[in-house]
Length: 632
Ligand code: ADP
Image (cartoon, rainbow, N blue to C red; front, side, top):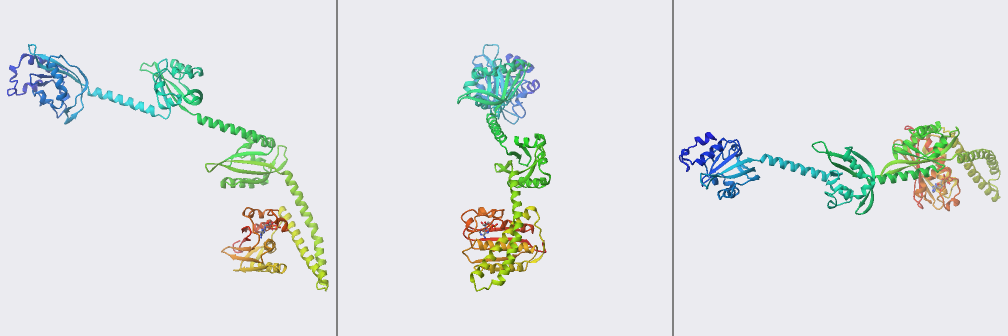
């Protein structure tokens, strides 16, 4: 700037050649130009501009430098004239020096207007007399400092926002009296206090209830001994606006250190977990109740997870098996199941677990003394949000029932065997009597013989069914399978039934030939049974239709009647042993409830299926499906 000031052509400037400049200007200017502190000088009534090298950077590039050297202030600083003119005027009017700190005075530099902050002083320069001939500006640009301060303020603001928006309660206690300096909304909610009640007050005043719970002593220890403190699900009694409450809180107290490493406060971070703690306590109480109940039952009670792993057994299981929990869990329970039933048991259980169907199974469990007893096990799935979450099962001792059943089966087997011989003898004698007296003029004699023959046939069927039942139970109902032309078989049964039931018209419709690999007598028995039922349960309607339909690999035989029909709830059960539809009909229609059971077993042994469609009062259609010979 010394060079520039010297080199400038002052001859045409109102100040004229520097040799003629007043001594005040010369002295002040040489001081300004030599100074390393940024300085600016306005001289004379027009306030011509001078500045030094240290001031030069404040003018930036592409700005006022060097054009404003010697320029009147009003022209040089036109953009900030309204700001600086009063300050200059104050000095010119003898008002003394001014002082401005970090003042925003935007100036044009670096090709645009910039926000520039200054700390500066305007001081008067006298020219040998008492009049003020110039104004000296000593200044420091403080833009960088102000920007730094602004940044710090902004990050403080961000930190404050973060604390306020944190998903947990955050509070900072300052000093040995734990004065609340920061407390976010969640902290205030947790305490049950407002910001007005809490801020800038010792926490002991804000929440006096903490004292007798030892919490203030904990805070003191953190502050004085620098030991962080953590608590999980701590019960804290609080005096909230809604009334006294016990809240469960997870929280931590951490000592806060100043730059010198001394503790100057404590930071508290916490979250209320009351709801989940209470929910768990309720669940635990429920589970305890369930265990008490289950342990008081003589039946075996057990539960399994959704994958089917048994994870709980009641006391009765441990007492019966003599095994420990470790021995029973992880599929260990299988060791008490009779070895011959284990595979079927596992298969049936896995089927239930994968389909969600209730589990029902009979198996023998070995007692601690080695004795095996029959059990009936049932399990049902429990759902949560539509998904299976666990299984609850029971096993009931059915040993005595089984024994009675066996005795009954034994009796049925013996009785039916014993009845067969006398029945065959009666049938034989009846046959001989019919030959001799069938066409007797004594109508009572001939008709009685026909009725007796029919009743003996019925008795024969019953005894036959009972025998089959015993064989099925013993697993000795053997099939003799051979190629059978099904339509011929159907014709034979229909003809036979038509003769014995002349009051019914049995229509047979066979669309196509069907060859099956079957036990002729057993399939005959199935069709005969379905037709006998159709006749028996449709006394008021005359027609019965029998139809066979052939598909690619199977043949379906359907027997349709227009009788009393079956309620949907009973339709599955009628294939069970001894099941008869309850009601008045039980007595109206004689029967045992085993015909369909045997028929279903025979069809299943032929790898077929049996079923019924029916509506109460509108008749029934029984059908069975058999695989064709070339498919089986
Ligand atoms: P039973 O006829 O000897 O009782 P079944 O095993 O043949 O035994 O039949 C079981 C039950 O199914 C019968 O008691 C009856 O209630 C019902 N049922 C069977 N067939 C028919 C039918 N065609 N119409 C109405 N109900 C029937």
